[in-house]
Image (cartoon, rainbow, N blue to C red; front, side):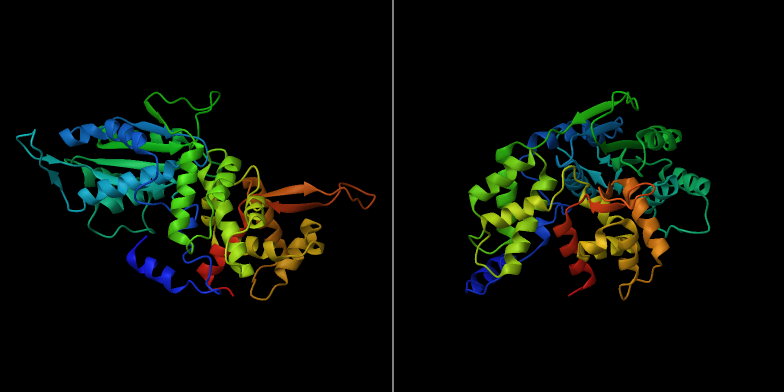
Length: 391
């Protein structure tokens, strides 16, 4: 917490003080510079990347772990710090144990949820190593690949982290490794994803496992993030323990539950987060839960449909047909019922919403189905409203 936040907190000690001072620290997709309790994991990653400090490219590595284990937080924090060392072209380091300087590679982080094609991967990598603007249109994938070869030829290459591989609608491990195979050791891959499937793709290079959070570490995360986001003394340690126990090592779900609880208490105008707010926050995180980052990476019109879905009453959510008609009829939603229905079916295929068959039938054919969100609804609603300035 910075000094300005501390002063704001002191000034807002009145009865009508808000509970939430800043939503960002509670955001499950917001990453901090120093993730809590992950020192040994950083050491393992640095051990693998250590050859770069001798001027040698590291081998490819697959970093994996269960949902909410902090994989993205760890890799983004590490690459942000390494990139700061190589912000100047042909950056070098000097150490007391080496007689010569060592030129470091360029460190590049890419999220496969938003860069989900061969073209986009080459484009992001080329942007990182090229001083000239890289066109997004009017150039082929083969041309971008050729330009990337030229850009890193004769240099120390790049270390490319590709996050969220292997997810539905994302890039596969095999795709990414195949696309960069022609670059040889000029491109070292750090692929980040879920635990390997024993019946799926085979990975022959190094692996680094990131386990789920222990309960005490998860409590520390909640209390630390809560200290940065909330007014003083509004979150009790026992409440953080309750969320951590429920979350089972998943920091994404734990933060989503705390976010929802704090948002509910803030809307009620109370002085502290109540136990019923904690339970409501937990209830607003479905099990299983689609990561919020998946939802926030959707196109804006899909997100708009999801946002309107959350405000529909029970009658308008009885079936897909009534839902699509209700959403299409909302002022400002410039989509036909057919388009809304297509979006909902697409989102159901991705697991963002779930189609649930109704027990009620009309006497003929299949019973109607309704859609239910499979993501943290309270968090998405608030973040969407803040981003779009929706009252």
